[in-house]
Image (cartoon, rainbow, N blue to C red):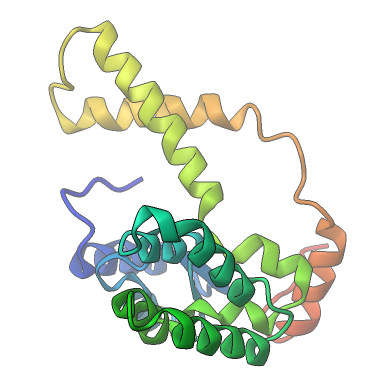
Length: 208
């Protein structure tokens, strides 16, 4: 675990560099929310990594610029992008979204355009892998459990954490509790593993 005061590119660089120094040789795929240049930082340290920006974050960010009465329809039109069968079909859906909504919500459309290459990395993979990498919801769910646990610990002691070590201990205990429920394998994991072995044949090996 690393403790930082913000999520700057410099902070993520220090984390990734430390991971590499400790023996991490390769990252096949990353899924991030792209805060403060996280994607670019990953590429600078692990240049072969496929870097996917979380589509769910993109949807939420886009909806921030849409008025309430249009959100349902706008969201339905966005779904045609990320639910498309191919990148080409997704681009056609984006162009349809732009044609329909750009006069009202140009900034929401622009953000899709600016991040398009990283938002559509998951289209390079089979459906089973796409479902795993297109969003960071798995880690967001874990973050929620950590916040709940640490908030309860702080409330119990009727004070904030006295120092960084206390925070790290509380997060460690939260992770230990959360991991007790990690009993189910990833759906279709055998198929996913075989797909990884084929796609990344020079970069993946199984220890027998």
